[in-house]
Image: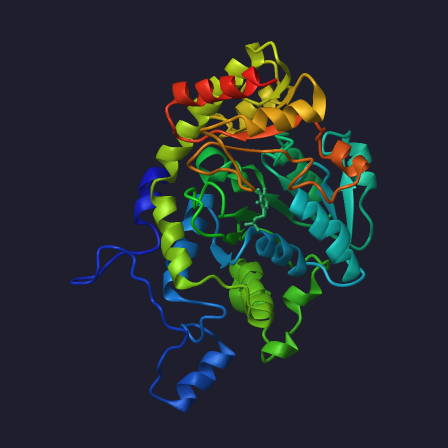
Length: 420
Ligand SMILES: *Cc1c(COP(=O)(O)O)cnc(C)c1O
């Protein structure tokens, strides 16, 4: 199946007489005929047992997203943050480190630099465009993963995924890619060597701003027996001595994440949330194409505007990442643009406060056009140094172009400019 068809048909196929639409299984628990049957499930959870870590509605959506990304399995979480957290905790414990590109989502920077540090896991931030020798030098004997974003929020840098995959693999560790902004419609990082994919499904996948969520996808091709990951090979005493690699082969990572992390921490989405996410996924290809074309038109408009000092959108020929975007995002660069206005922070805020159609919200990748001032909102907790490294300055506005008619979007932007 092509990706548009997968968005509609993967994950759930009704049998004779069953509902056409994915049913919401609103039950925390499942019935079995015997105690022995339940005992067997505790050894090998092959059926639904308890909705803290698996549910049939969520399962269907997990299968769909795994297929869209080209992975062997997926696990949904209650937020993108939980997906990023679990993607690392499944590989690192206290005393370990991992490497992350400096231009990633502000929430991930805080999670990695502050909260994981408290748990004894160190994140080493690197300039993703640094020469390979410099990136190689960032690795330590305890480094267990490399993390980056396809299209970074909000810096909009495009990651050289192939370079990062070979870097990670040279050091015997997997590459984790946050593919939230690109979605599998515009880029499938597994095709370029990535091992694990995470998403905030709160963004384009849901698209309608109705529920938060996240997902982790396992490509199924990383060799966990290379001695860096004994927890994947040696018996898990908390799970009846199971060896994830021996029992689950290519699904080792995603099953370990479910059996250890989801079992112990929860963070599993409700069936109703998965139902809504599925509705978003059904129209994702149509929406992504329209986001790309509206954003391209808006970026061209902004680039010509006298009150704009810079526009950052990799779809523009003038952009530093344009050539790389053509390779990794050949169908378009998604719907988010950042730009700076003449007059600094004060004028950026004034511009935003005079928009009428675009809403000023703490959100991005919505069906409706929205704006955000990263320096006062999502990235408020970062130091000036971290802000600079994340590619953000005070006069920068993040514009998330929606699916309204482009003429209405541009007319609204003109109202903001008239105020400054
Ligand atoms: C929003 C976002 C997250 C966090 O997702 P939540 O669903 O808000 O927890 C992670 N990565 C990226 C790129 C994001 O845009």
